[in-house]
Image (tube, rainbow, N blue to C red; front, side, top):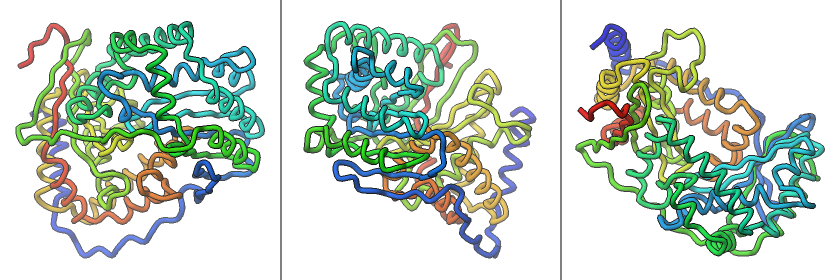
Length: 437
């Protein structure tokens, strides 16, 4: 074990002491404005309202994510979304029409949803939502639009194939989820090529329905914005999307290992664990554990490091059902096998005995800070509101998540570590010249 890893292990081990009789920490004040839930008839809107905000952002969630695809349809959710972004409105592609008015349109394909994000000046956003509603009413699935959308997605697939962390995450998802939730978000070059206009039309009609749409907004949530969202929902066919059951494979005790080779300079390792959903009583404890593992080897850094610079990082993937947590190790920054061994030592120690109250207070503060940092932009906050609120945290989902961290006790951390961190899947991405040993 090298000196830095040994020092980290000793520092963490010192935190595993018998819980003292420290008094309970009082509930924190609101960190974000209190969010509310409004029933607009055809959809529900979670919103964090700032009447004076000059910029506003809206996430629109459709029940058209990866879990609605079969393996034979891989990529259809992304191809439908890309075609929607290219659908002409008054002769101009929707994405370009919104951009010409000073706004932006983005989309993501998650395990549970296809979500579109619009951001613009607060007074202009309702009109942009009206453009989006018109595109939803008549999506362009012509051969020319599908060909252009397929080419754009194929380029994104190739980018992902060159990113070791993305490759490892996809490997973990594929081995954990047995449903469409484990499929690559944008499909593969081969699967995209096999999809036809009929495939897209069938998927769109089945999944883009009023019973599967919701929205979340941050900024100036004025009557005009609510009216535009109501009109969007009213324009969708009634009924709920056709659903495929979400399934996972039980993680065995022998820690399965998946290996891929890419043109990279150093190994990258992802270790994936099952995790509680946001609505679970274990959510706050897992947020603490995620932060603890993510920061275990970077505590001497004077700045917040990005994913590429970190030796070890962690991500909570609560966009899937059930959720998961992944820890990644950058072999270009640290000996990956040594770091992984230390992570396993830490996870076993966390399960064996509780943290001291003093140590837990520090880890909770770090977890709260990391969560707040991740929810700074309009896009991030609207995403958290919609995703976490839709999984049991209620209308004021961001503050509820922070409260769940505050309520976490040493016994909670120990219980959750014992329940979730003792079985895992290892995904390794190695340089093409390296052996699997």
